[in-house]
Length: 139
Image (cartoon, rainbow, N blue to C red; front, side, top):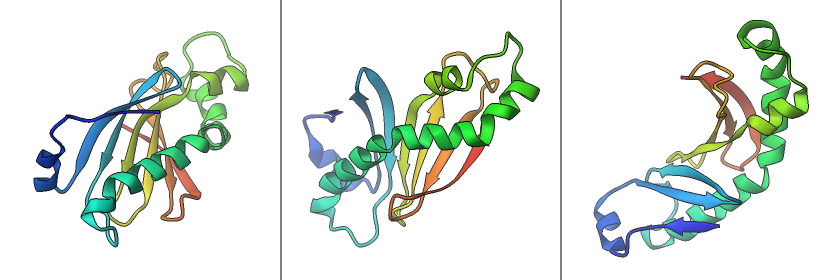
C-alpha cells in the first residue's frame, strides 16, 4: 500500500482532519478522517494506516455484503443492459473512499466504472471494532 502524503506533514498538525489518496493493488482511492477520539495526535497516522489496512483486508467480505444487499435490486430496478452474474457484479465494485469518523466508525464506499446505480455508490459501514454492521445505497 502506498500512502501519498505531502512532504511537509506539519501542515496537517493545524488541521483536525486528513484527506489524501492511497493506491492499493493498482486501485487509487481517497481516505478521509477526522480527529479520532482517544488517539493522541502523534499516533493518528499509524492508527489510520492500521485501520485502512484492516478495511482493505476485508474488501472481499464487504463486496459480498454489498452483493447480498444490492445485486437483486440492480437486476430488477437499475440494470439497463444485459443481465450480469453475481460474480461480475462483485468484480465491478472497487473501493472509492474510506472515511474514518471521530468515533472510530468507518465507511467504505464501493464505486463502479459501469455506473450500475446511476451515480450512486454502495457504502459499507463498519463499527468501531471494524466489523461490518450495514450497507446503504448513497449519492
